[in-house]
Length: 356
Image 1 (cartoon, rainbow, N blue to C red):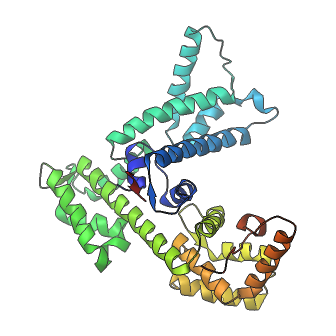
Image 2: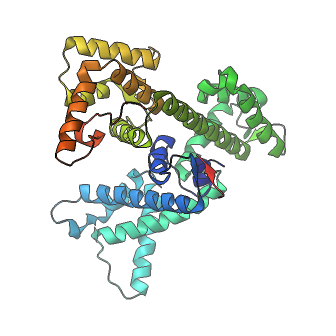
Image 3: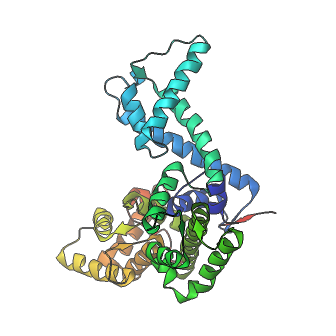
């Protein structure tokens, strides 16, 4: 079973691009597999990252002394904005917390919510949400609502089910890259057969629709992972180099697992000035990698972009980073990394487990 699929079943929903970043940290040998101990470490890291994100969002909205906390209405809105659950449920969670504290003899300030209380409410509700996700094909409450809206859109007669033509249209509309790929056709047919075998009627009810969306999402995630593995092999980057390029990618990610030409110009501009000629050349190379139809690339294509820029020594980037690397080594600092240069290349190229 893939790691992403397993984590979803346990209630941990993360974009595959984000997840791969943390998988690489625990899969230190680059084997492409995780044993049970590595899986536990991965989950712990994901929890820590999630709490750090929530804590940062809390303090970012505090005015004055941080320990004083947020007014309760703002704390409720923040929980809703974090995308885990809606404001109505957040308000109920705070009310439960207040009653529980009162029963234990603790006095809770009505006007302010401190960070400790906020994180406790978040963690408790997140645990409940993860249990719900296990029964909802790995989808969060918000995702289920979004999928319900999509289901209703295609359910033109409001009968609460969809026919075969609707099913085909949904797959084509939502996953065109899979629907129109001849090599993916056998896998797609297997997904449809799997859903058909488990439904009780000839028409697709909402629970069957959720299973279909689950299988399609898993198929898309696995396709992304396979594409990344192929790109890494073709580029010849080391595990460390891939991880540093991934960090750069995530810093410039537009929120949809994509990296724009504008971001490429920005990170390269940190290393060396880019005049009009270099900008034109970069746009040409970027277009070659992206296919020319879009001005964004995913992470596998980002790796191919970096490899191409290094190979042609774009804007003397290889010379500059090599010089910085030697300078850093001379003072005992080791190789130059992406975190110190904004863009770097460190080299010259080159039990029961879970498949990544």
